[in-house]
Length: 264
Image (tube, rainbow, N blue to C red; front, top):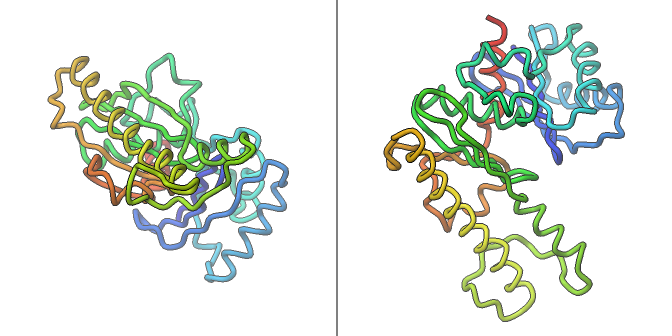
């Protein structure tokens, strides 16, 4: 079994893979103040509840967009399985089927790289992956597996949090799709601005990225597949048809796949 840690700014997703199948998955809050021993204690408790035989785990892999937590998760891996994990990073990019532009080798988020690896290996065509997390990121991959470019905007939850923490009278509201864009109270107005506004952002940016990718590579726009992932993509699901596929676990599957290429 392979133990994967996808460390994001808000949550850490931990998954156990048997082959290409996730057998167990857990989410814990990201906290840079926690030590490796503290994270180990949390994760060990979660694995005991399943239960999981740690002797069956042969290796571990880490993707992190929080650099300060890589060290603690090396400790977690060593405590759990007696081995250091594979760290997704520039030193192993040459082994991957997806190619990163030289200008982005030391800048690209490893979560976005994992998204691109899984999407391209799964569909074998040009694609755009929208990752709905703390940031809302769009990664474009051409038909040859080269990352053509990325667009990043504040995530839906981040935008909402910024709104109510930086204003005196606007409250936090539930993220529910309003029946109309014409908000008649504060809750409806914020829901309209955030959710319907992000619908426009997502659809508009995907359309623009398809056009730009087509212009640069000659790929027909209707041949470019669009995939959504991340915890908050379900917010827009009922009101947009922008995506050909939705997979909340795309990043984890990409992490597993990247680890298998790196091990070759």
